[in-house]
Length: 550
Image 1 (tube, one colour):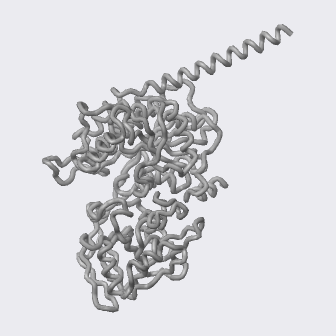
Image 2 (tube, rainbow, N blue to C red; image 1 turned 180 degrees about the vertical axis):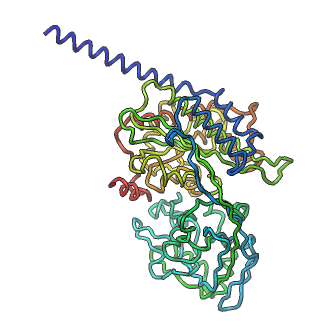
Image 3 (tube, rainbow, N blue to C red; image 1 turned 120 degrees about the vertical axis):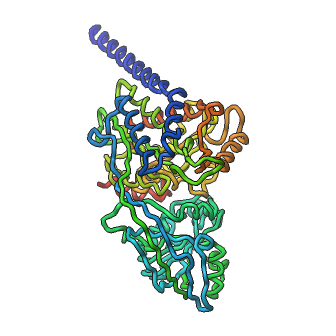
């Protein structure tokens, strides 16, 4: 009897010791994240030597090799059978649409000027695309969403037609929280969805009507990138997509409706209801787009820590390495260094990877660290990985994405881009409380930021995903100060050569905390058996549930 009690006591002591030892080594790993190493990575990746990290340039070679070397130094093996690189077969496209187009209406011709009134691209990987006498139809918001009882195409055959649609979704237009997600943009409001749906409907082309407030950006943002693109090489040459993908200003759209004897305001108002019926504008469009094609490979870079108990399941960390390279001169500088976008995020990504590499007891699930190419030109690298990943979507627990971290010091908040979409919010909240922080929604969810970085590629295949950062509430200076810093960055540095790192002004303590936060969340996910899901009303829940049936 005494021997049994003694044996049980020894087991309890051993278990307690092992538990404490494990907690200590996890804490040690977390505390290996530091500002000195963060700064080293930021300075290197955003230096002029890296020439703005543009895909297909020497900047790509330097950036991708730097990341591979960093993984190697940490002892993290290459994710692709020991290789750190995943080739992404891509094609650069330089577009030359007609400078002017004439739309033949029932009340005479309407002439539109390229970049002033419209922009046009083609996803088709071919030298030239010609649109001839294509009828234009107005299809409201261009949405088919069964979970919301919504179908803008229900009364019309869009095959071989040009579909004209409104940007964003009816929830934003009405500010009705019971309609879609109210003010917060859903994927149905994003132009990428509208392009996809138009193609599913058999449309020849699609033009999205631009308006700054519902789009979340001005017309100039579109015209700045309208002449070029990058696409993943496809065997079918993207023939399954619309031949024309483009935008038209709301002023030009109103003129077109007027020429067609239709009331723009009345029809857009009707489009805010599920009873809306698409209508023909009784006019034809002719347009030719010539394209210069350049086929090249770019690279994703990834390392992996294999799980000890469930190596067939994984948590994925991601951050894009690319920026805009060398471009137009601004204030005497032509190198778009991308220190904040995405140098700081890459540094935090590497620091999180380092913390995992320090663990004596590796996680039960595998952990993948992937830095992807060509985010700035359409999430190309993450799209390719999501469809050609190391693990199938149903075995990928979650994606945690790093994007544009500002060195503003410690923050009280953890801003979740994608707030309310999935059960991952609970993991963020728990980790944030350990840092005496609170979670909060992104400041302008109507702008659709959730759909504009690499985590979205994972969401599209059903994998719960988000990106997080301290953003809105400075511990030292408060909310207004933080807002001023962010506005200053958007105004003066975003996508400009001025996006550089100044060590005399930077306070990296907040990015250290964010990096630790990423580590805490990923570590918990990698040592559980549960699968966090999308929330009930998320547009991605059905995709996840379907994949989990495999």
